[in-house]
Length: 128
Image (tube, rainbow, N blue to C red; front, side):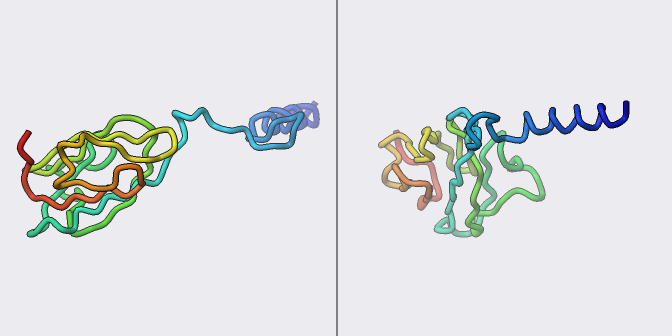
């Protein structure tokens, strides 16, 4: 009885191991579930300020929030996000290929459209 239980457990684990039973190829994640490495560089902001991507990083009020003098790489799924400090905030999106997009009105202060590197170079919110 114990061997049957162990064998059954091994069969169940094999079914959920990430390898398809009939093709021996890895099971791919749904495109919206795949995470992409997005690097955020706000080191041009002087003096350093705290920054956040709400829902992903620590909030601005946290003692462990990231500072702009630190270049950080986040693992983000495709979707819409917000970069925020106490003086600037804007939306950006990560597409299915892990590329960035943001409103053209931010081009004076934000760069990295079509890449995985978001660079912020202005300290204050740009005029709209």
